[in-house]
Image 1 (cartoon, one colour):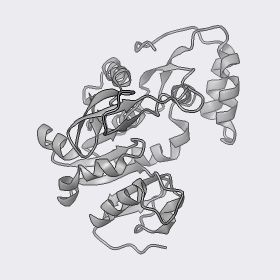
Image 2 (cartoon, one colour):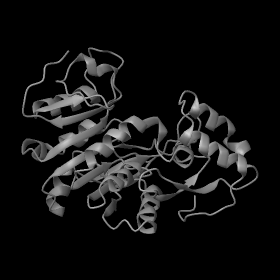
Image 3 (tube, helix red, strand yellow):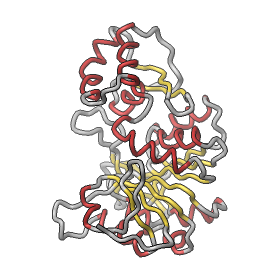
Length: 300
């Protein structure tokens, strides 16, 4: 897709659909309505649009044929994760340094800067064209504190293999994934660790860290042992990838154990945040917030 902001004449039905997505009080079924009607609403116009986020009014190029970008265009946010994003905004409002690992379209990066324009935001996205698009968004919105790094965050510096995957319906560009082994079916991308990046760039502390990297969250945390040991990461938003076998170790159990060992407690990403010690209750969560704690909170 074109990375530049595209201005087109918006059909009236499409404008109505935007109003419905952003203002209609009942949220049930909204995604289905948008997915069902957007093609009819857009008429014969091209699918490229310029969307305006609810965060800071930032403008971002959107292709309506892409699932995530379609949500951003109509809702002004990544609607599926709206509750998590609300929590993210509340946390980043006082953050000085923010890391967005697995940035994709950069919604979390942009939301953080809308909440706190003085924050320094480092966005990590290994897919070249997605990283390029986010750089263009930063430039067009004059976001000089948003730094986009075409890197994968793992537990070692070097290279890994990027695999492109667009989901079952071929319209989700946010599902590319990394494998550490060399694979001729993919393409090589540069990797680093959080410890190494912070050392090389003089980052003393990460106030807010978001990780959505297709099951590699535990691997990324293994590359942040020094930061965690020294208490230099405050709050972490991350995806949990549980095994279907409750007794099996998996990426989620490893990530939780690493954070638990370094004094983190956890909360469901919905307000108000209720911090608890790690426990079986987390198995129903696909996303979690972890925060460095100084007091013990009992699990229920």
